[in-house]
Length: 56
Image (cartoon, rainbow, N blue to C red; front, side, top):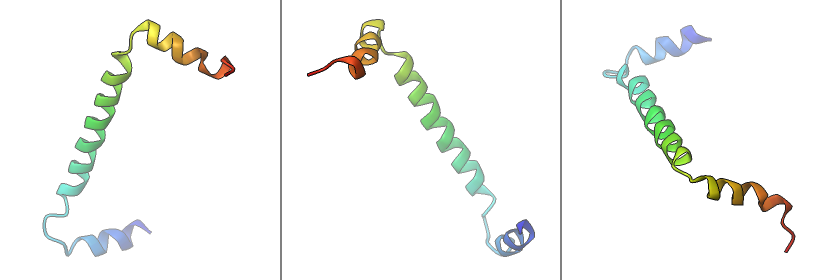
């Protein structure tokens, strides 16, 4: 299966940059989400953890 995909992609000029771009985009999103998650204060985490148990 991979040889069919590889054969089709060999004819495209500059195709080798796409995996690099996708990896960079993935790491940027992952690191930004990690920073966002770690920036929460303990009070916010405690409030969010109790939300499923609060009845309104």
